Picture 1 (cartoon, rainbow, N blue to C red):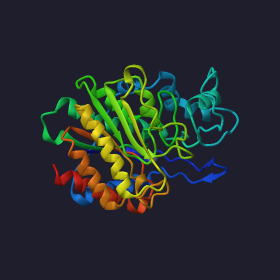
Picture 2 (cartoon, rainbow, N blue to C red):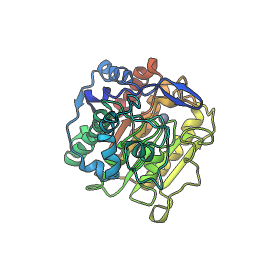
Picture 3 (tube, protein in one colour):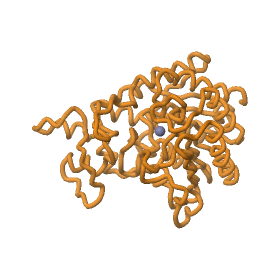
Picture 4 (cartoon, rainbow, N blue to C red):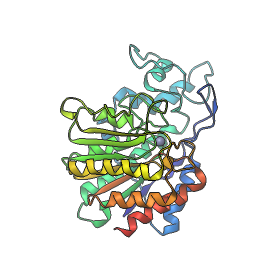
Length: 345
Ligand SMILES: [Zn+2]
């Protein structure tokens, strides 16, 4: 097993934001990395520092104008004469019929909600989050005979599964899972992305919606009155060549652990039927019973079971650690997940 991270993942610090009629303290904060990194240290597993694979794999998935906004938007924002605040965030959301003239219009075009602001060091973390995931993909592409590359885990902060081709949202900016799935396609014919985060990964769904070479299957809380609210229903099954290759398992709010695994098993059956060459697992610890975002109740021990089920697929797997906001248990929950990977390795 190999684990990848980078010091730059801890730089991005969003400021408090207004949502649902009140101010929110950000949940997706650098302290998450501090807690998560305790887990491999406790288990004596080395963490590899990611290297720079470059911008090309990112631009293979995301629109140039959007990536340019993520990279340079903060400087454009701060160069304005008027002080609009210390992070790019407008509260204006107009993705269509918007010529994107001026940084406010670009923000309105490229930010889908107020939970993905861009502050001073955001781009550095966003870029290295993608590079960390790409490190695992490159290792598999170049050293697939090396047993270590068959199970790989990456810290993806900020997370990515809500990021669309040209829009940030839900704490996400670059879609790490989509970027590595596309990158892996240069060698592998079929990639399956399985997403067990509490929320539906509408960005991944959008990016591969009309394709049959990348299966997307997701277990998540029903989107009815729950983020991302507008996607994640069962009837979203793909389109054109992609029809049937997008499989959503929305869980009723309040699903218990046994119920969660019932849906996970269905998703795993879907992945097994697809017979992918590589599995990409979007892992969210926000399904944990005490997580502020949880509408289901997975226990710490449950993450070990989840890992064992993933490994049992018997395919090379790259796990991206994305959601999970209950700091006191991130270390324990990741240790439980890692122990499930180790036992079956
Ligand atoms: Zn989530």
